Amino acid sequence: MIPLKTFVSERRAANLLAQIRWRDGVYCPRCRAESVIRYGSYRVFQRYRCKNCDRTFNDQTGTGFEHSPVALSKWFFAVYTYIRFNTSLRQLDVEIEVSYKSVYRRVQCFLRALDAPQLHLEGPVKIDELCVKSGLKGRERDSRSRSRGLSTRGRGTYEQDKPPVFILADRGSGDHYVLPAKAADESTIRLLLAVGQQESLVVYTDGFRAYDPLDEDDTFTREYVVHGDGDVHVNTCESHGSLARSWLSPHRGISEDKLTPYLRVFQLRRRVYRKPGKEALKTILETALCSPTIYATRA
Image 1 (cartoon, helix red, strand yellow):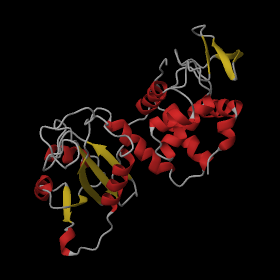
Image 2 (cartoon, rainbow, N blue to C red):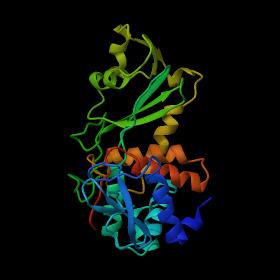
Image 3 (cartoon, rainbow, N blue to C red):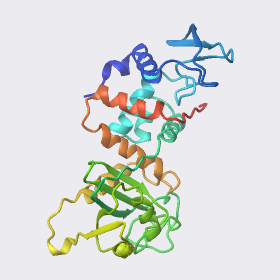
Image 4 (cartoon, rainbow, N blue to C red):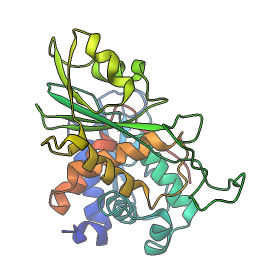
């Protein structure tokens, strides 16, 4: 369900922002001091004054919603529909009646506030990779072809505008990770699997040759998944990869530099996929507002 009451009331949106942001107590976003007092109001937001640095701030200060003339409830609606329903920025431009440039800047600000997922692998782990076409907007083809974009045969690389994306499914914890990389090689695979807690981590892979060195390493116990031999298994990585492709589809032409934050949003969407609307909105805002680094923009 959609939390409509929050999206139609600016006061409710402001209260939700204050509840999430100051859940551990109010502090100055500049000097981090906790000696603050209430100091009037700014529109519907509570205003504070810091006794340490003598500066004033409000509930929006230091967040991606700061200095915006657009109602906070509209930005909540935009963030919620963007993550929950994978709404394109062009569609949000029409729905909330805000210029595409402003929507783009605020969404990018929100994406930068998302932290990288922390890998905690218990094992066994299934790993697979896929290559995503990126950075193709405005590019001309070298020759006429029926294939889409500037597609090339074989495994992709970051330099070829076709970066690999690794998908890890941890059967022990039930967590899934979608991580872009520069190349699908041995060093990258070892770096991803090095966070395993077991002495000998069981890893399920396909026949891709980059996984072959795992056979000679005592740190890993490699198991093969051969799709053509009728092995019985759950296509967890393949299913997650298909969902990632569907997520990226409306946002055509994402460059490889912006691919990482878009995939972080995809993982956040999977976390809130089955949550009720109000709880999902809280989780989305907590993920961005309570991160160690909060980005602000003027637009």
